[in-house]
Amino acid sequence: MANKTKAPGLNRLFETIEARKSADPKSSYTAKLYARGTEKIAQKVGEEAVELALAAVKKDREEVIAESADLLYHVLVLWADAGVTPADVYAMLAKREGMSGIDEKAARKKD
Image 1 (cartoon, rainbow, N blue to C red):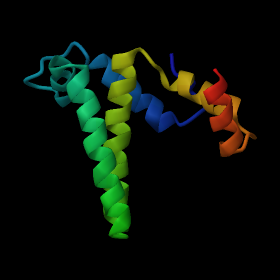
Image 2 (cartoon, helix red, strand yellow; image 1 turned 120 degrees about the vertical axis):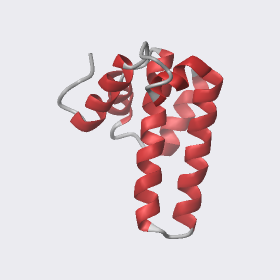
Image 3 (cartoon, one colour; image 1 turned 180 degrees about the vertical axis):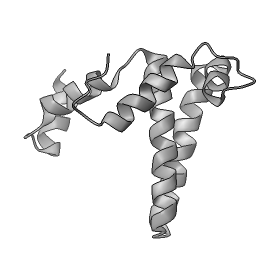
């Protein structure tokens, strides 16, 4: 179960995504993604990330907001597909809190 104290909107969306895993792909975009498999889900994450990056380069604030929402949705679908929960990610972020990005990357290379 997702940690309710962090990002409640993302947690609600994640719960909805998980609930739609077994829905009819004809009536649910989420179910359609699951039916098409991990490769398609990962592809959508990549597409949305590129669209967000392009919106940022254009300095289009509204498009950055819209593409961010699209990317977050697809990342949550990917997490659910991979058996990852928002709580798992929150725990990793907490573990890294207070650590410089340079130090964190160096620590990953040692693992």
